[in-house]
View 1 (spheres, rainbow, N blue to C red):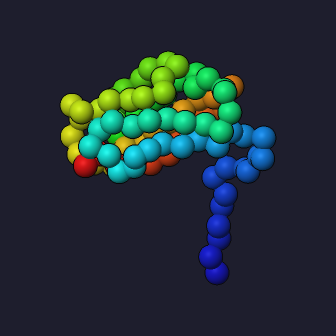
View 2: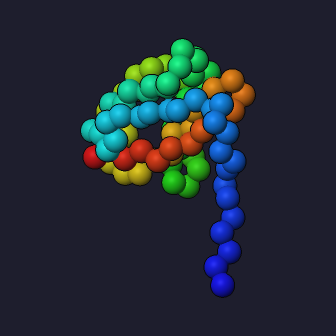
View 3: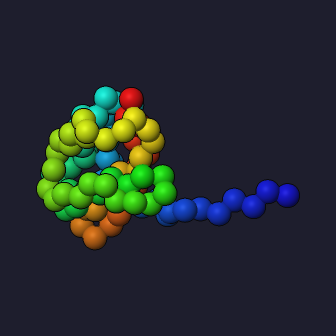
Length: 88
């Protein structure tokens, strides 16, 4: 038997977050389906180390970080959304 544990609960009122292009060479654009401000943005390594943190951004430049897989956590109105991003 396989046990599936949900990691989040879908709420149709949550904003849709787009991160593009992904994969990228280090420049990402953040977008939402509304005019909500992105309160805080964090970039973490796969081991959980925060290597970038900023507030109220729509574009992020990571040209100085090594190629690899990272997790981008975005805070919007006290809710947190995490997406995998790839730097080539």
